[in-house]
Amino acid sequence: MHRKRPDSKNLIDEHITRRIIGAFFECYNHLRPGQFESVYRKALLHEMRLRGLSASEEASFEVRYKGILVGLFRLDLLVENRVVVEVKSTTTLSPADRRQLHNYLSVTGLEVGLLLHFGPDPRFERCINAALLYKRKQNRGPDPALSGESG
Image (cartoon, rainbow, N blue to C red):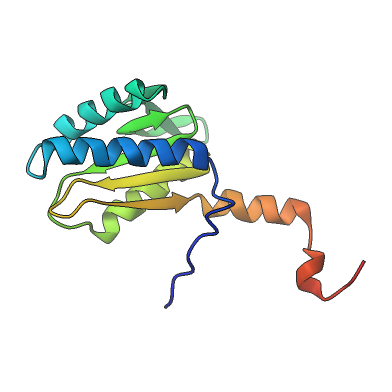
């Protein structure tokens, strides 16, 4: 399956995620691979604050089912109360890492998250809360440009 590249002109919270990604590469260049995840998380938290971003470490979110607590999630970082950041320091990323970030987006109701990999080769992945995106499109109705109607 071919993945469609995102429209870089219309990225959700682009003004925040761009600064987070810059902080990620700054930390990677100083610390290099091989550190514990907690070291990268604290360095990233510090670097983001230096860049004027508000961020909290290990923010907690509850999952409730019919009024009872059935789960508690701790996010690595929550930036500007808008972006979930998940930090990984493994050799490779697994599908479970991506599912974890998607699950966090679902639980928090936030739109965008970043998976930052401090592995042998630094990389990041941007994830979108597809359920929210779908709801937003449903509320807007059909796009006239796609329906073939002219106005």
